[in-house]
Length: 111
Length: 111
Image (cartoon, rainbow over all chains, first blue to last red; front, top):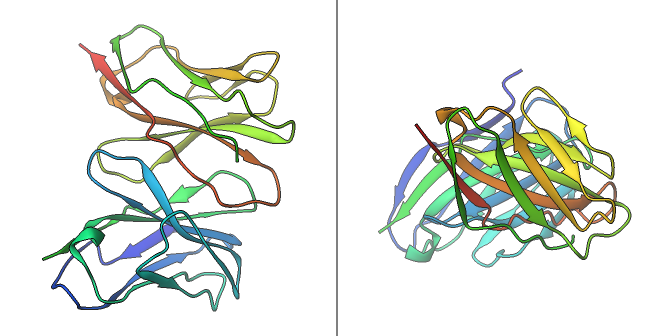
């Protein structure tokens, strides 16, 4: 099993551009999450999903959108990128309320 | 999910036991205590979890007080590779999946 796979690992965007961070898991987990982590800070929950077709907002959802059309994939869309979205983004999944498995992260810089 | 309080940072000598405290005074009866750690800028890694009994696995031990308002993660023989940020979180087994992380404890193992 590959676990949780995030792409891309690194990306530089210009202000106002849009992009999608991809997240895929092959563990048949129903729960998936997107977090962001600013330098020296803890993780902030952006969006989460408890199953295909179901998504909900976390602590810091503004400026982001998600979809969950399949169990495996949970892409995070950034519309109109802003410097404040410069961060490391982590995707995670879990089977129900069990332990979370995290991806390696996607480092995004908005200039 | 209940909030947790952890010290910002701690040091521990290599080879000694590292004891990381966590306060979760508002924990509910159906909430578990989970511990994760994050090494450098990698994705967080699950360590251990428990409900009310003490737990032990190959990585660590978890001691939960009888009133469940606090817990301690114990790394029995700390090594330099245990230098990381350690997060204590509480979550219910089912239902609310708005799983949030605090800022954790930065543990530094001293040679």
